[in-house]
Length: 276
Image 1 (cartoon, rainbow, N blue to C red):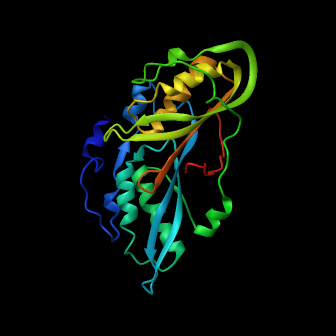
Image 2: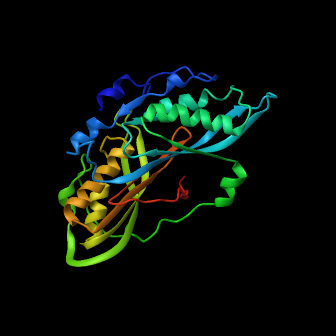
Image 3: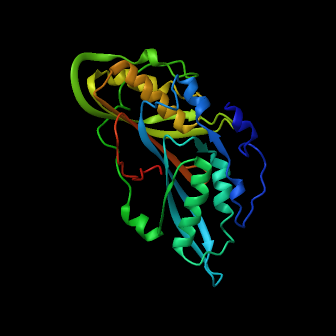
């Protein structure tokens, strides 16, 4: 378990506060997990963003009438901190009985509080239900590898030794799987996700990628660190010209978390999948 997470509200009984309380946000430094991966915070081997989507965002108009909306929060992947997910939910619930004179005032409040917790500027977008409904759901790009016939018996720890190349021929392709599962390192609750690997480099054996991803099944770690581990293991194997790894996780507690990591600058679209 991350040492800071022991002091977070995760896995503990919590009072739900319905009036604005920014102190509920609980930042967890990324540095300890980066050190586990052999990564220095001063020279990260990736660029990217963590998209958080909130489906339980509500506040009051000056008339007292409530509003419901969907929030999108883009946290830079190099921010000093992640925000512990239960504290994030508790904070958002604290807006439920809080009056905001305008949408701009609400968004400014969210930007200020979330940026302070993350340690770097967080982008905030608040959308109406109709706007999000109009976007629909999307399918992942590239080839789905889930139908491949593989055998695996060890699910406790990620096994990078399972990864292998099928040839030295350089290819540019995108592979995806819906079989990613890991566990919350504090509560042990399952985290379900879909993962995409897009790269240019020696041809990756798809079956080896699938068995590797399934080996996360009982692994305990936060969403962001799982994606960073996958990214680094593939980068070490392939030495690719470019590599992007991202995961779209199923929401829990009204929030879904979607980390993106890439060798270069990216501007991904935050599009929902069918399980989101």
